[in-house]
Length: 85
Image 1 (cartoon, helix red, strand yellow):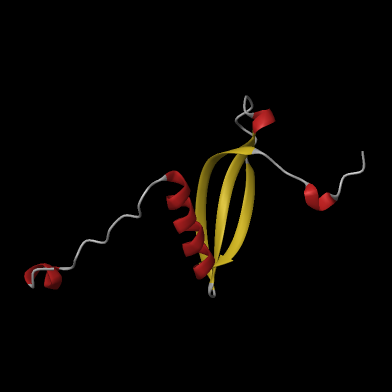
Image 2: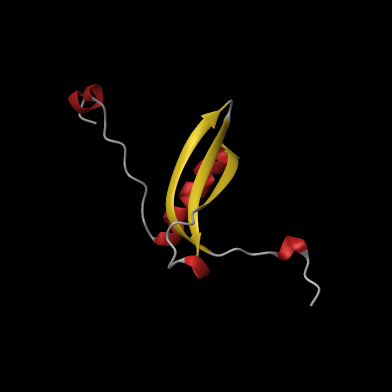
């Protein structure tokens, strides 16, 4: 079977994440354990996904949508509460 290298899929279980910012980009670090190695919890793979702020917002909104959740609402500030907002 001759497989196209761009048709490669890796499946894993998400076990952690973090982020860092640099310039106008966001580095989202996802930590996964391959599903075939799930019984050996000490082998964590780190994946760095670099994106713009707009891409991060689109991804967040997409995740809210597909999970049926709504984004947290921002509480009004002190001035808005005083003015009835």
